[in-house]
Image (cartoon, rainbow, N blue to C red; front, side, top):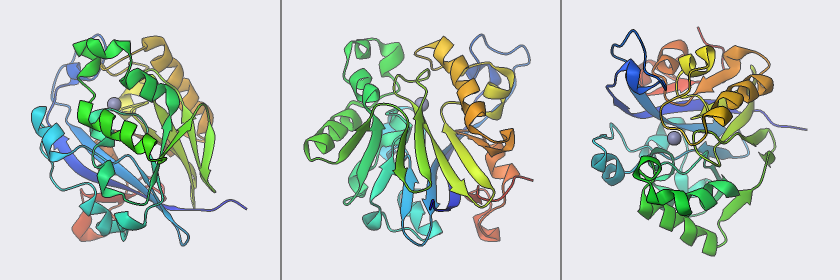
Amino acid sequence: MTEQYELFAIRYASRSAHRAEHFIGGDPHDGPMPMDYFVWVAKNENRAVVIDIGFTEESGGKRGRKLERCPIESLALVGVDPADVKDVILTHMHYDHVGNFDKFPAAQFHLQEPEMHYAVGRHMRHRQLAKSFEPDDVCGIVRLNFDGRVRYHNGPANVVPGIDIVPTGGHSVGLQFAKVNTERGVVVLASDVTHFYENFETYRPFTTAYNVGDMLDAFDTLRAHAAAPELIVPGHDPLVMQRYPALSPDLKGIVVRLDVPPA
Ligand SMILES: [Zn+2]
């Protein structure tokens, strides 16, 4: 029997940006298009699984990004103690998804193996690709592997009952998304497979790219894994905070429920 989860998006940072920054080829109607930063939590009576763990104050600061709240301390907002978390899914190794691994003393980290090969491989000599990675994070995850705490996957996999991962590549070589079984069906947590709704809806990939063809194919993969488009949740879109209900009135704009349908 598979299991169902409550599913939350926690917004830990935001930045102002313009439309042209988010689409390869720019955008003819340039204007403001801010970006949110999230971690996601799937929780039921048996366990909590954390999907991506945000950037650190230091790695964000280097890039002019400011934490609004610590993404890991924020897990308490959904009743999760990071010390109890046994499974963390890392969708990919960009700095804003893998800082803070040291705050999960009991977890194993699920990662597509090609992502690590990419992060330590020849392409990192190119600033254009390396700028999304933080060397200390990469080294830290190498160390975790030596401690037996990285679970490398090479393809789609089941992580725990009711939660699966599917690799797509494209934005980063070993990028994967997560599928979480909830009361409203299987939610496809796209992470950076589509930063915004608009990227996949209009087939215009985000500007940070390893392989544009794979990014475009990945939009089809998302759709193929979602029973309906409303089940796809983009990785950085402020609309997520608007479309889904806040966990409680005081957490408006901070925590939304993804296990109930969007408005
Ligand atoms: Zn990314």
